Image 1 (tube, rainbow, N blue to C red):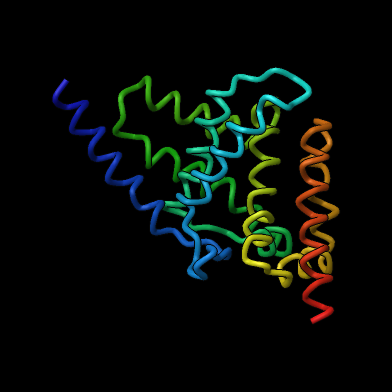
Image 2 (image 1 turned 180 degrees about the vertical axis):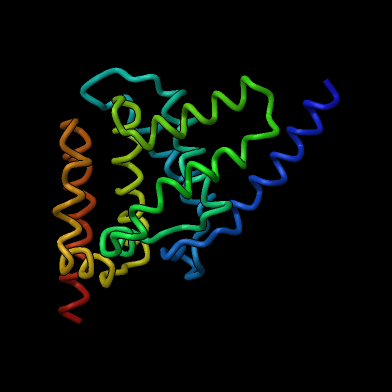
Length: 199
């Protein structure tokens, strides 16, 4: 038992480092957002959006998935969506690097926790279950929502220019609520852009 507690504490010290992994997005006080903050907001989004989905899901599983989906970034760092969609080599190496990272991160945990965290992370990556599709869609929407909050139109313009928005569309088609949610978030972005262009 003492060894398990020691290893849990060691793991918790390690995952604290997700607070220090910075993303390209900024917070509303204009400092870089951490991956931990993004994961927290994603979990909140999952909690409040789940009741509106076309299909009943395991909400607890979805929230757990949201909380750990980017845990590998402790080792790999965050890769911006622009880089991911514009650099084929980065996209190819991402899966292998992240698989090594998740194994390294969970290696000292007991078998039950190792299996739980690996299964949640892997389910998110495969994007096959309704819960995984839900969290993958919200993952994309959270980033745009954050850009809307700080009134950033440059990122939206980059996504449009590089046809990334069209590629992202496939993430939202599985559920009518998610499609409507996406439409509202991107409409807000377009309104912000229009207001900025008029000033």
